[in-house]
Length: 320
Image 1 (cartoon, rainbow, N blue to C red):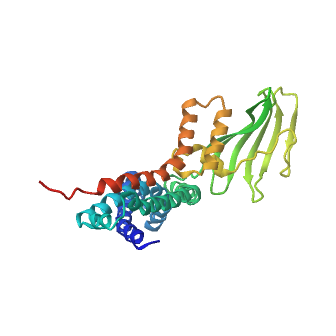
Image 2 (image 1 turned 90 degrees about the vertical axis):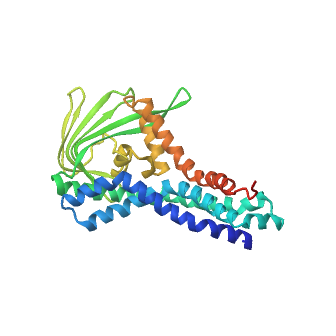
Image 3 (image 1 turned 180 degrees about the vertical axis):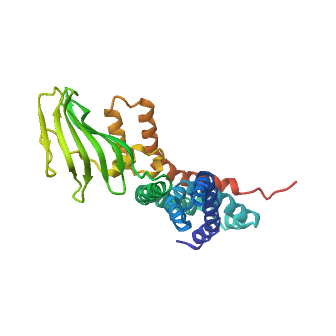
């Protein structure tokens, strides 16, 4: 990196940090301040609330990086222009295009950091925030579990075309994410014609470390026509129903309203499940698709804002 590049990046770095801090605080206050205040007023420990703040911060940062990039370009180049440093640089033979190279490099770096945050850090933090929120709700109202449902799909080739088909549908009266349990669960298996074939009623389904669901307690299997009935014991899984291939995190992902808290793989899976479910409205699928491309568009906005803000920050030194 040449001295000119270091100088321009240094002039933009300070306003960028300032912008990240200001916009993050404003966004955090507008989104979560009232909720966190209610937690404290209800007797929740201040350390628990601060932990919640730390877990939602990565998602805030991803959204504030582009805005901070625009602010840093405007303030940085405004300062250099006001002190005639841009004039001196151009007088030394550097064109505006040459001046924009370190700006573009800084924007690309911020975009990459933002993308990696959104793809790896934010989803993990969002899962922990969900667990912590469930624990807080358990302290407030004594109910840490919520109803849940999930459609298990597979891809079939019909007449040369690939289609998504629902193989089973899982519902539970209570979903406890902390203990990874589905209580009072019902698993409905569908045949090739999308008609119910068997229904499994289980007191509890537990997600184990080997990434499989296991039956806990009493369970029984019934065919849709009522001609077959079987008791399930000792955690055995019936051969008539394929084991569901989803995790508790997938249940959280499909119900998430904020797409920034999901990875691109999670959103892509949610899109496939939504397209295979006839009860899902097209508008919901479009929203998921928008969230998928936002994972790329929001980081790229940092590059665009940097390249737009830098020329706009240069002031005309001529006066009447």
